[in-house]
Length: 437
Image (cartoon, rainbow, N blue to C red):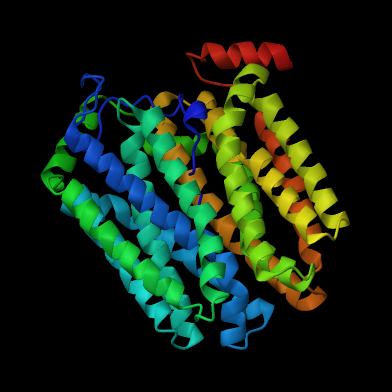
């Protein structure tokens, strides 16, 4: 899922003045009840996104068996979802202008309900692909909208941490729940009936929480921003930092999605793990990532984001090399958990560096653009692994993720060498540059 940001590493991005629902930076420190309800509803929404996205890897071998698919054909699932997500990025602002946040609160969950219901009915595989695209559309609307909403409020760091923590909780629970269902002689598509119910509850909560956030409220907030003299968002394309960060997210998010999407199949077919251990490798990866984002931010602040990220990459490459060498299923689960831990800060670090290199007026537009490129990587790199698995066997997975991680490190080194080329360079990046030069 591509903008899962740590609240410790988000400060440069999150200094907007006003939320889209009218919550100003001058509000009392204690959040009022209405805003608390909105945050709780958005957290529940993010948990739904985590449940769906993380469970893809667990259901992949089951769908492949159900429809007698090759690895290449089943990997088309990775292409379908991000296509819907990219479409959502084009539609989100228009929906906000016509219907406000209340419209997003209705349309996003409705797309999720339709998608999960189609999958639960287990129709022909072509319809399953359509359903994954519809789900990606709903995910894109909800993910982008609530991230932008959280990022522009006074308590941005705290709220963003709560949202993405909820995503990680859903991400950790998804593979384990799928395996629990299927190992008790129940069909895999029962999981999607559960997601239908979860999405229906999400719809009720979001509509209740955002019931007053109509189009006029949104348009008023946009008019206030226009009066602030914001820079044209197209200006982001004039900065090398935007393009190098996009390339970094293209490689990194693709690597993250490939690991989550294929590790269960790899554990079952290559390591001959039990279904429980195979699902635990995916859940452990997500749990490690959540803990890493929570804990490693403090070390990142002390070392400097550029240097710390290189260090995390080196640990990740070492763990992947061990994963490729050791065949023990239990050791593989432990290594996957540790890998998730050290990879936890890698996405937020990219956002931190990008926002330090660009003027503050461009942060939201730039992050939205590079995150959408990350979704492209999240589609095509896992699909490419599926093509390789089809030709060379599942064993290629362990080497593919290692090479992808090395490539992401190379792109990071090029990106991290940039220095801010705009006035008003932030003190933290000046100090870090002095330490690392």
